[in-house]
Structures are given as C-alpha cells and as structure tokens.
Image (cartoon, rainbow, N blue to C red):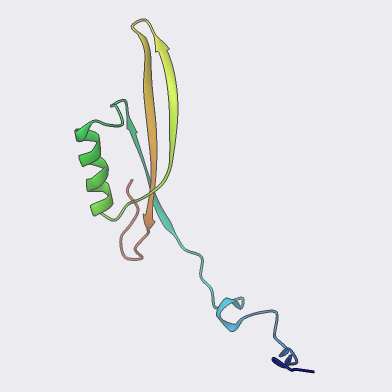
Length: 94
C-alpha cells in the first residue's frame, strides 16, 4: 500500500467572518447620473463625452436602448446609467 497524502481534520469555522460582522460593515452610498443620447454609438463626440464622465470618476452601470417613433420617423435613444461613490463631505447635486 502506498500513501500519497493524509486527509486533515477540517478546522471548525465560525459562520460569520469578523470582516462581515453586523455593525462593522457600512452600506456604500452612491451618486447616480443618467446620460441620455440620440447619437450613434460610433460617434466620436459620444465617445468623448462618455470618456470625460469616466475621467470624472463615473462608472458605467447599465445602458438601455429605446426606439421612438415621431412624425419624422424612428429615432433611437440610449440611456447610460452611471454611479460613483458619494463623498461624505460633498452634498449630492440638487
């Protein structure tokens, strides 16, 4: 018989990690921004606008795409949803 390794008795672990105990963890507060555009997704001006938001600390969270019909025909609208951590000393925009 050849023994390759021995199984160790598992250590007893607490179900609650100290890092995630109640009272030690604070809920993150976010600032939100919705950027609406009817520009084509490949438009360089749109890319610059989105890039500037990223440079300002905004993180893209989601994008929705809508088709609208009016007297001039269909047009497309994209809603870009951004978030960033809310600084404690900076009041949210009005």
